Length: 341
Image 1 (cartoon, rainbow, N blue to C red):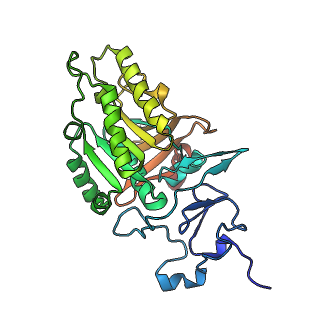
Image 2 (cartoon, one colour):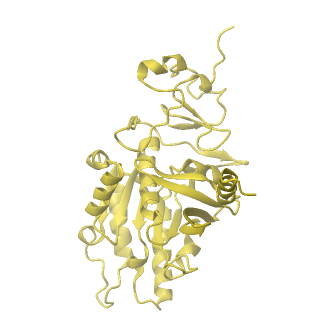
Image 3 (cartoon, rainbow, N blue to C red):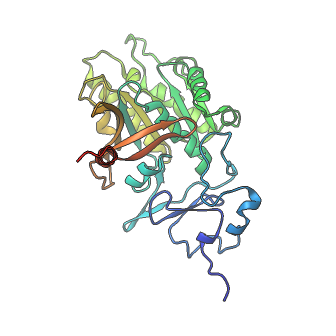
């Protein structure tokens, strides 16, 4: 009998990605629901026996650093819709494998998400990992809109971190924009320091169309809505207009970051950002048994049955955010390692 036609026998197949029970074809750029029904009918297979010829180990999944990445062809199609239940919902995986598993695929494509946390928790790393993952694994261009610091400083920091994004910038796969130099005539004439949302949205959409972007990061969102700490109504309407107009595009997934003051229970400066977001990821630093842990918590995930669990994560150079597991399990394992009852 001949060999059974299965994606599991092909070098292009990554098993249990983006979540258990599915797989991913690196060549076609598609989620594989049933590996016994290859979308290529076996015509595009590269047998696993030939891995050594092309320099791939049996379990190789390239990191995001351009020095190590096996870059997919830029002509690959985008990721197909992922079946969930009785319907098909399109997801934009975050690039953090365990988070995508918890979210049953990633962020809902075309929706807006809030990543909130104190200073130094990893909000920018999270956001850019989302952008880089989109380029390398799904051929989705991305835009990073820098609000608080020059985009050149962000790029320099990424280089130090081990993510060489210069090639992606030159190829116009990623676009790093500074708020003031790239967005002119934003401020309303009759309102000092207030930004005209219509002009802002018009400019953002212009750049989205320029590189056919599918992922957008606004880091952070609060300074755009500044109109006085007490002007919540203005902030609410400003953000509502931005979110609605961006989601009208249909296939651009947006991350907004929000800085949480140390010791505060708020998720955003104005307290309204989280209500319009389809999901909220909270990053924090917490102390247990004299050690500081980086904690990730899925505070909100629309249409995803997410368990209310805190996860411990690490930030690794050239890789990004990696989840170690649920907090309670990590603490149990460490107590067992120390021989505590």
